[in-house]
Length: 433
Image (cartoon, rainbow, N blue to C red; front, side, top):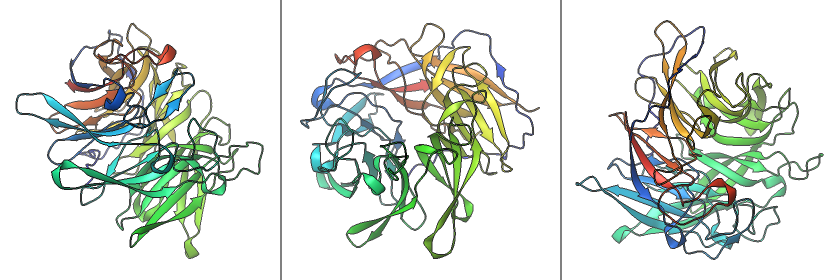
């Protein structure tokens, strides 16, 4: 079954949050590169975090590379391959073995998996590709508007891909994000583009969708179509399925002040869902939220890619009454948090920043709750951008022993060149605290 982001061991009842920024230099915890992508058929540029199975194997995606014939151009330069899904398996001697379990071919089966994966209860993997899936007209680097896919393990370690839904643009949405299961086996997710294209934005503000299994088919239902200011636009990150079947998510822009919002969807009679804005961000408390997670008390936590008191992003908490507080502001050592946050079993929060204000190329941070209220922000590791990796775009996971696992977009020993973003094809790393 899907490995859970560790829940809080104790309920956090903190009325006031005042972050204490450490004035020390970047802490260099022991980092180990578990795998360095080489590009080509091996995969390149992992942009999402990892998940783990019960045996301790790690699974993730690379946005490019693989055996597919996709060719993209843009700010990253010319990249080849349609992306991959990979598995990393630990050996008894401390080494790890990488295996590509699926290589996207573009067109019908999808291309460019930018987000992470999820397990069902029987060990099948589910995810999305941002593009591909057919000839639907979407503004993209490859034909198609994206797909939701399933990977099923078979004998001999082979995996079989099945496309559950191909997005068509328009009211159906396009460029899907991560998906999540409910207890009944339905999948929920967001599409960041299209939806209602009748307004000023020709690419729309995206959708929130549900996929319901019926035999060998899955049926899509659009639960909500954002409409922009003050409603929110461009849903970003994953969704949270809370008590009472309430859904929470983040909109990267829009809201009351146009800087992004946290939205809430509540089921009503007749299959209708009612949307409300839980919180709208302004410049000083950050903007461009990258997703939310929750603790056992129902408080929401997330990071803003930009803004905040330091101007380089912030970590926020929204309590059950809807009150927002900044629990960390970046600029002292880290710039632009991008991935979603993760709790460990002790109630500490972990996340990543794309860049550093000091001499490093992105880092991993930890937020520790203080006994008397507030949080202490510390750096776990600052990447060099060389063989140890650089610019972690996704979040991290933490095991019961406190080891932290994640990916970086660039760096490593591969020979990829991502335009001005850096060299190397990316790595999978482990940090020992």
